[in-house]
Length: 330
Image (cartoon, rainbow, N blue to C red; front, side):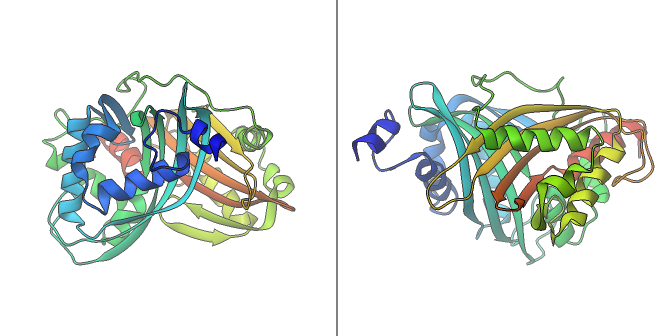
């Protein structure tokens, strides 16, 4: 027990470990309506990056949280996994995968209330020290959300631009130019599982798609952006090849990687990555537009005796379309 307490030095003693803290405050904020606790759990100058925008300050986070709950008042956030690294002294980074359920009961950014029940995933990378989150990267599967609400991601992106006042005044998606420096400068840990998964992603982004057959379990379960749930190596090939084909010369970068081995869990890995370059190829986004696009992604992997057995990879399709529409004027 002493070891667990030391591991959470500086955190509220009601949390027995770091995953318990991350899952616990998420439920407290969203489902228990403890929105005001964001003043305590989020630093005053926290930087929260999502593909659609960069938000600075816990007051802006509170405003966004209230708006989401007004539109989806019964939203639940089911913590599927927390893959983490670090220490309480230097801070800890969690890559938190969530399966969210909600009913579209209020008017909001997704239009007039439809009464539609939806489910989708989010992966959030959060840096916490002394019981407080001060840096965050969040990828929500917006493609899955808008499709379930009866919209096409491209059409939703266009409506978003119009709603925000047009191409000149609209909120600009996250890019290296619109990003903001935060307090966390870490790169993860040196676990062999994080290194293995990073190598797999690097090989696929380098057009070595043979890695799918050599590293993935033949019965791999895949959960991808757009709410795509599938099995088998073919689904891996379609997702990664289709994305890379849209941006064949874009710079692929891995910004953070974590590997973990824990009791009662398979070896896991979390990698935060990006593509930054022109949409000059035919792929999942159709005809090339020539737009310079930034794609922020976060991926989780679980390994088994026959290779990578489960993969979860998210990016925001609507943010990609928004960047392309701003380029083409479409």
